[in-house]
Image (cartoon, helix red, strand yellow):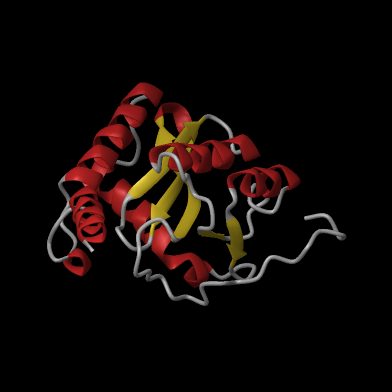
Length: 189
């Protein structure tokens, strides 16, 4: 970050819960190993209430656009209100401390939060999601055969995760079903 940049506080303090969807998110970047020792990179945006993978982006680079594209995808998935007023928590990776990321957050009305430097536990929810994705898609393999295979595996996993994976914290329903139920209850009230 620039020395003159405003300090970004840790607003979560390792509390990876939320009582309402679209209020608190975590995000991270993970490596997707593909053939010949190369990598793709995946940026994720996870809703802490519904556990929905609200946005993601895959690229063959780790430039800031990787994480801003994931955040913009989450905003688009949320519709009219986007992510306005939501907290987005990340680690201190160069992409998340950049001016470009700060500007995109400001444009989307997102409140930034970051954990301490070098402490993966401060972003454990995002780290856990990435570990689950890799474990469930690679299934013991060391890498995908190519970029297309890796992209398809992530897309299939994200779709299944959001629409069919049951979470004990959600009453054994999927993230999408939980959000639909939350919307129905809020409308009825």
